[in-house]
Amino acid sequence: QVQLVESGGGVVQPGTSLRLSCAASGFTLSSFVMHWVRHTPGRGLEWVAAIWFDGEEEHYVDSVKGRFSISRDNSKKTVYLQMNSLRAEDTGIYSCARQLGYCSGETCYQGMDVWGQGTAVTVSS
Amino acid sequence: DIQMTQSPSSLSASVGDTVTITCRASQNIDTFLNWYQQKPGEVPKFLMYGASSLQGGVPARFSGSGSGTEFTLTVNNLHPEDFAVYFCQQSYRFPFTFGPGTVVDLK
Image (cartoon, rainbow over all chains, first blue to last red; front, side):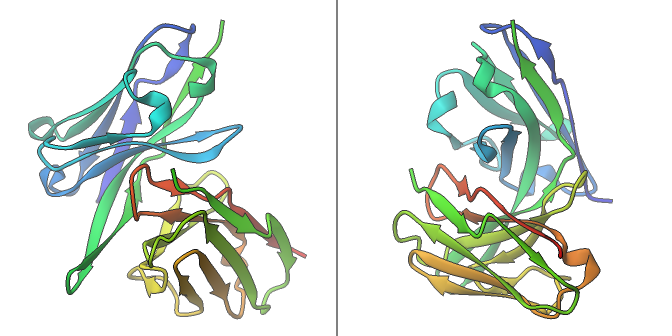
């Protein structure tokens, strides 16, 4: 069964750190680009970060650049999100998602076809 | 960043109705537009990619169209399980961005 399970969330104070984990099962993690997406009270669904198959490329939303770092360990079938200098606006449910690619000729589309249930992060003093 | 908007923000419909949701991008995204459906307590379900191509297993009553900056998702013959929130998302350029969602609820 294809599944993603997140862990590591919690209630933390501003300025502190958390590391989220996303455990993959039922598929070969190294064959997929992986994403973190958060659902926040004020901004709805917000894409956070993506990491390429072997970690050779990473992308981040501007609001987390320099503070968050996405990584992966394909041998452990796990994707991580290291979150530093947390702010109140980082509060939300963080989900990891698998990217599936669809190519037609030279055009390749990407969509997130498998999502985890998410782990809650609350940043509050 | 590419901003995504959706209209309406919510709509009420009955089983059997046809509903249409519009998604607009702040700049040209060609057809790099995805649609997702999310029900309370569930993870988003990937419905459509490339603006009009159904993900496997998605019923044919769902259809999409558009290119450039304006897109539509149409659900024909609304089924009880179709009442949900629908999100569009652009995959043209990072950062990927989502629309704010459209709630489709029972009239």
